[in-house]
Image (cartoon, rainbow, N blue to C red; front, side, top):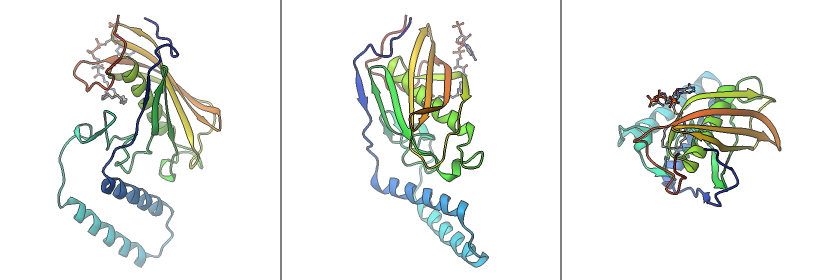
Length: 216
Ligand SMILES: CCCCCCCCCCCCCCCC(=O)SCCNC(=O)CCNC(=O)[C@H](O)C(C)(C)COP(=O)(O)OP(=O)(O)OC[C@H]1O[C@@H](n2cnc3c(N)ncnc32)[C@H](O)[C@@H]1OP(=O)(O)O
């Protein structure tokens, strides 16, 4: 079955709904990671900073949950701690402003210094991860929740750090449980990387596509 990206007329826009305090901590930890990478402080300051961070860690561990990221509180069907879009996961870039309009899934990301690969550029593996996630969202919103079995990424130009990037993804065709999808990431309107993936619809994954098209 082929799927037209422009055909279904549905619109989904994720509005973040996360616990304010948890997001605040995650944002501060992102700052700490950035400061840790850039710091040129003397040893005494580094030791003092390490002690303060250790104190904060102990405070956070006073009450903790020992569960998979995927089953904690969700935001638009995905955990708030998701590795790519989780606003409360400080190592998620994160991918934001996720939307589905007429078959096209989109999102925004700005890679921090911690995502550096080549000097000044995002690490290719992290670019691939963001593309993979957008593909997963596109497939889940268009067909059903699925897992990636194959992804190919072509890197066409530098994907910069600290700049707003746009990710777009869509389903191209469906063959039984196999879903073929493609995605790209853009900086200032120019494509820097494109991905093609095969995803397999797997029973038992949490469904986030209540009005998905049915499989042939
Ligand atoms: C993921 C969480 C969801 C959460 C809720 C939803 C949220 C939505 C938004 C989230 C967005 C996140 C998106 C991240 C996406 C990942 O990161 S997923 C994580 C990485 N991927 C994995 O761990 C998958 C590992 N692989 C597997 O576990 C198993 O291969 C699977 C996927 C369960 C499939 O196994 P199976 O059911 O035994 O299927 P199998 O018969 O082997 O293959 C089915 C068909 O696919 C074909 N196939 C299999 N592999 C390939 C291949 N590499 N190339 C071509 N064809 C292949 C087979 O030939 C077969 O074709 P047909 O014979 O039907 O024509």
